[in-house]
Length: 380
Image (cartoon, rainbow, N blue to C red; front, side, top):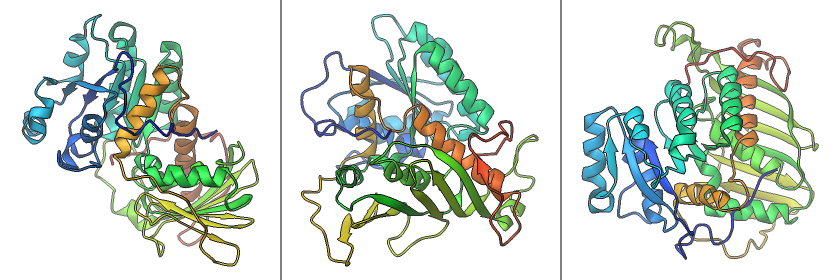
């Protein structure tokens, strides 16, 4: 079931008792490169953490000297006390008992996620790590996902995946209104976003799940999909042996056990990209990070959506959800079984589409997907 955010969790109010230390592994664009110190809602891990009064950015690591220097130069005095290491191994080995790293953000490229997450999980009893915030795409195969989930359960570490558009304040606000019945009973959710299925389109796949299950718990039963086959031809020879290219989504259909139908169009709609239109028995809601929050009744007249919360860094909100969960709160959104399902849908879409022709939907894939070993070069 999709969890909700506390109204206080993205306000800079009273710090949590025993403010959690956070370490970041990888200092690329999504970790540190996007956003700026001056922005109110910076779109990167570092910016979100620095905006929060509930977490402490303790240490960072990157193998690139240029990335390390860029981090220190860009964020300046705000990160003067942050410890900087040249590898994940060095960072983890430096941890002391009196300064545990309760949360570790992992922002390396997709094909290296499995190795780094395993290293963090195996070190968790010594480092005190209780939560991992993992960039998408989480894994290059379902077998990798299964193994990470098994190790994380044994180490008692929660893994949250950064389907970051999920945490936009106005999106969470609209999710709550849909849950409360603003548009009646939800029956259809249509999302818009194409390109790479696991690395990019997965943001909107998560939005479809978020609103399909907003009212009634359920699970994905089956997936059918179609991809742009020319995207596969253009990728040949650009990846290591043993991997397949990551296709671009054309269309995706999801059957949910609660009766809701989900559809993802692999292109922009009239509201742009990264958004969903949520259809209910009494109206419709449009929700997305970059889409104007709107709702209409069954006759097309605007509905009152109340006071829309001010913008905030989605990374601040996500990290604060994780921090609150470590202090006895609900699990953060996009954690454990939630991201497993989004990832499962993505791999099922690839499985379905590669069985299809150039212009028709592939075969129906029931979930869980039987093929756990297909390896996709998910490098977004």
